[in-house]
Image 1: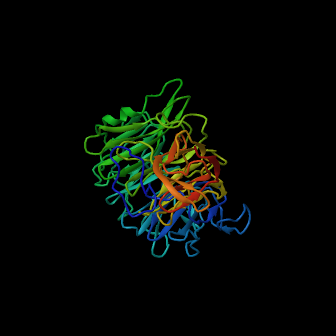
Image 2: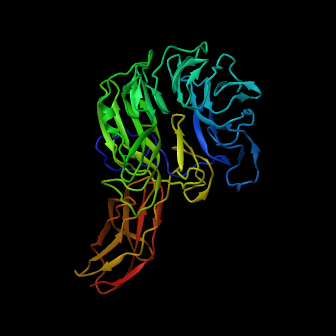
Length: 489
């Protein structure tokens, strides 16, 4: 299927839609409260958050529940609960990250015990057995909000001031081999919300509400040395405006992929920067900046596209206020422009934000947050999308408006249809009860731009009454509208 022309479009993959994922959510279990952390490893999705119960897809709140205190695992292929992974934590999980080889997941949060064993805000589990890793047990003094793995280092950030009794202000690292505290010490003066290491571990990126790193002014975002935590030059940081009385914009998520690093921002204040931006890893220069309004909480790179969770309500050059909140969107990672993928969630309590975190196992997208609906159907806290299946169906076309001003010709005009995972659709004009195809064309449409499509029957029988209808086709689904009738000139 065709996708919207977005400048440098990522190479196509084997999928049945214009995007690399369908907009039809796949079956997945649900949670009874917000999901805040996600990682996919070794055939399972590991999920953490505020929840204490999980339930099957389709189950109403409070029914069919299974106890899972702040942490659970689900089958990557089916979305079903993994009954073998069952641990009891005594506090909220804020972040989960998998090791590059998928053999471990690291969990950070507010907890101090796992199955009664001391684990002060960080724990690790082997994905083969689900067992606690005995060597990973640092003592972190307060909340761990974010985790990242680079080489043999586990980087983490949050609101803490001490690790193993040693001063580490809001950012620290331990060895994934020994569990020992490392010298890495960015020394942030306020909370760190996001951390990610470059794929080659040449540097580490921090995001949050800080104004200084190592005593040097750096608002909300920084690039630091992977061994010491010392500041590195990062010209792209200028994408984030300095705080003012009417605007405070913070970095909420960071995603590295190859030679690019992508950032998600959330701003307080009308018109304050809420969008996404990309930088070159090697040079630190800004590549693009997208100024959608509506806080961006999560970005994940999947199959050559950048998926984002936000509550975007206005995007310059695309849709404006009045179209509602769009909680799931797709961006071209080369330009930041919006792409052909328009599923949606709602936003539920307590944050009333919607998607808060996302992760991929390579060919899928898992999304967690405080939503209670996905594509209008009940689904709380967790959902997933894959590249399997034919994707969403186009919206059924309206009755065509017909005219005949030239002998033997009929023109049919109809508003373009909509499809949540395709932008370029094929339109066919069908004549009579036999549905004879008399004209075909293609047109692009999105929820913010639905032009009229006109097709002409060049060989209509003069002086006869004829019925016409429109068929719209996305490459998998053909949807037909109703008939309009006209007397041919």
